[in-house]
Every structure is written in structure tokens, then in C-alpha cells.
Length: 254
Image 1: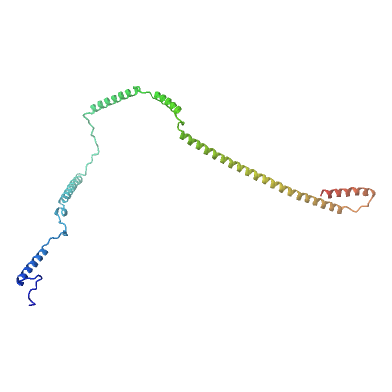
Image 2: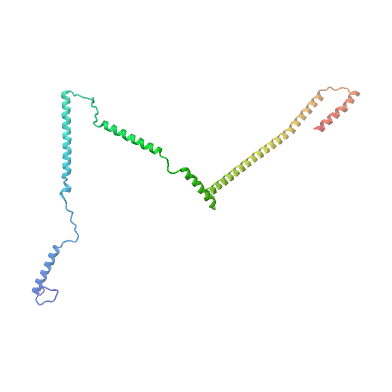
């Protein structure tokens, strides 16, 4: 009993159910094997004309053939030169000959004459409009506009010029004030230097006077020592008060 076919669905005949199930399963497996993929993952097809470029090979062969032909011609020329020791002709005796030279010259003369005539007509032509008259009319219109207008002509430019002039005047004033301050400072410095020089001179003068006085005293003392002791006569006694007066005067001066 355990070896008999166990169907999933309830059936009256297990043998027939087994055959049906096997056929269904085989059909399913066949479909799975022969199922086509939804996405093509195969390699792209290869084309012969992309790998083997016949036109390129043909052009290369033609190029090589032309090179070979040129080389052969050059070799023939070289061999001819070697056989005949070569002959070079560097003279060109060809004269340029033109069949329509005279016609072209006549055409050139005609064109130049026409151009000159056009230029003469243009230069001799008087103008239809007078520029001077236009300028006079414009000046009159400008006068009328100035009389009617509330602000003068180019008032914004005048304002700019005024501001510039004001700035320049201020800068000049500042410069002049700075220069005046510098001059005052230099004058004050000069005055201070003169004062210091005067003070130094005043300080030097008393020192010199003192030195002179000391020198005079020393001289007098030396003279007194050198004078011999003389007898005191009435004439000397009369002179002695005068000497004492002179000494007193020197002391007072000191």
C-alpha cells in the first residue's frame, strides 16, 4: 500500500491520476527548458565589414603602388644621369606672351577715366543742405530752450565743477595753513636758538671778567713784591692816599 501512488487531489483511479500528473509535469519541464528569456544577454553579432576593412586595404595598396611607381621613375632618371654624366639646364628663355594684353590695357584705361570723371562730379557737386544754416538754427533753438527752462544747460556738470572747485580751494587752504604752521614753528625754533645763544654769551662774559680781574690782582701783587722798600717821604705819604683810593675803586668795580 505504501508503494502505491499518493495523489494530492482525491481520485477514484490512482493509476490514471498518476499518468495525468506525470504528463503534466513533463509538459511543465519541457516548457521550462524551451522558455525564451525576456532580456537578451547574448553577445552582439559581429559583422565582417567592421573587422576586415576592404576599402582601407585597397587605398593602402594604391598608395604603395604610386610610391613604387615614383621610386621606379626616380631610379630610371638616376641611372640615366649616371650613364650620361648628367646635363643640367638652368636657363629659362621663356618669354611671357599674352594674346589679350592690348585689350586688358584698353579696359584699364577706360575704368580709370570713368573713375576720374565720377570723382570730379562728386567734388564739383554743391551740397543741397547748408551746415552753417543748421548750426545757426540750432543756436537759436538753444537760446529759446535756455529762456524757457527752469535750470541752466548742463546744470549737473556745473554742480560737479563747483564741488571740484570747492574741494580744491579747501585743499589749498589746508595746505596754506600747514605751510604757515611750519613757518611759525621754524620761526619759534630760530627765536629759541637766539635766546639760548644770548644766554650762553651772558654766562660766558662774567667768567671772562672774573678771569681778567684775577689776572690784574696777580699782576699788582707781583709789582708790590718787586718794588723795593723805600723811605716814606712827605711826597710819598701824599701819594699813598691816592694809591689807596685807586685800590678802593678797583674793589668797588669788582
